[in-house]
Length: 94
Image (tube, rainbow, N blue to C red; front, side):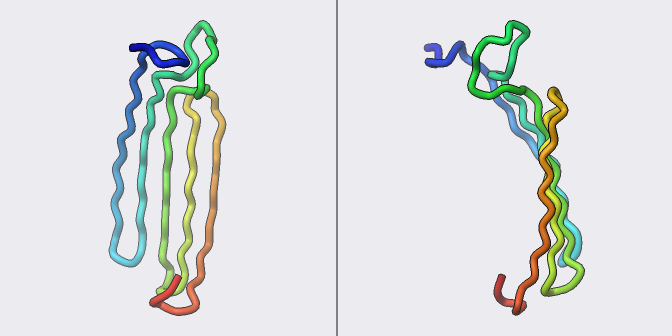
């Protein structure tokens, strides 16, 4: 049965991550949206098809965290970047 906004489509998400104890963490993800723009440019809910995301986290000490997250639109070239610095007043609280 077709969806109200068009034909059937396929979506896929996959990722990999790794972290070293109390120091460095990274995650790399990919998302494919089969409902993205086709050559005809028909109206759709999501404009693009291919996205990649990267997240990095580094703990320089027990109270500090440095993080960087981004999402890249591989077709359109747009980029979202979110840097973040966290400081905890105590080791047991964020």
